[in-house]
Length: 358
Length: 118
Image 1 (tube, each protein chain N blue to C red):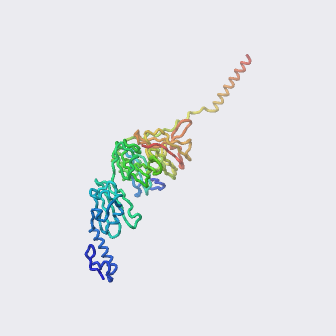
Image 2 (cartoon, chains in turn yellow, cyan):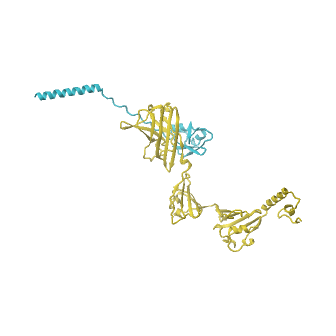
Image 3 (cartoon, rainbow over the protein chains, first blue to last red):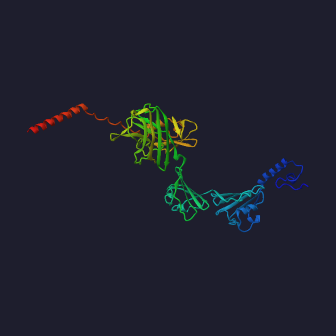
């Protein structure tokens, strides 16, 4: 016999939802969906663990399991329930656990006093374990002067606000302000430090076995540390008429640039006078002592000996050097490669530069 | 102007290329071109030749530097190109040199003969 009761939230006769034999299934499901929607708007709220029948120390999973469908638990640690959830984040001031429907899924959230730290977790009986743990989602702790990077081991994010502070922190990979991210994976601590200027990233870790010390910092190679460039020949008389090969690659490690290129002319064009290779990916640092920064093989380049590559540049600024002249030894002295040495099929192959940039 | 970006030769004004600048100062900058995750770069000086090279990039790439950072005029000069090697000094005529040596031999021979006769 159908019930004469009502659904919890809309006041609809309960038999419509559950046990009327003539009610089409589609309609029954529609009512159920409406009821669930309504449930989200009318959650039963609890403010203490004992209201859920819990006593003593409990885990987050136990709290979630005790939550009835369509309920919400809001705890503030200034009340008697402070510290009763054993695995809650250590400095939370408010925990909210929501079970929005009839399934077991609960969304858990915790916040710190100043609202800058927040943790979240999901509980679901369909998962193993049902509660995967609390994960810190936001919140940045300021790093302090004269501290050691070795001591930032608690998972979380830390900010070094200024270069002046960074300069006092020991074992920091760069004396520059930045963001430190710390993660703990089974006792192994991972640190990643991102410098604010230039987005230079360093990483290291401390294994959890034995008495292993911190590994040394390694700078992370970024996509743009490895790339391509397009070399081209330039002379005061004009440029080359065309190329059948024209490509270059580079690797940048810190301030060290290793670049290489191959060029082959399809037409000499207007090359005359001193010839340079241009298009280098990074300017040469003014402090670079290796003025002759590379060498090159060649083919169909008449009247010259082995080629060395001199890095020069426009002006005298610290970062304006981006031109590579071609030189060779001529009767014991160095002479520049001229456009007259080139032919229509000249190739410069495997030209390689190793130099410092700023 | 063609760019070879990781083996893909494309026109500099290919709309798929995204341009940014790096290490920009009043005297130099790097033009960074990104195409489908690959990076290409070129260092340019704010010199007459450097600005001429920049002018071969599409307008929206030039706008990243000019006039905001580089201003309306070059701030540095281009270097002087290296000079060609000095021409070799002229060598004496080998025939004349042989005649000169032959004359020296004849003179020495004559001097020896005079010494023997003494």
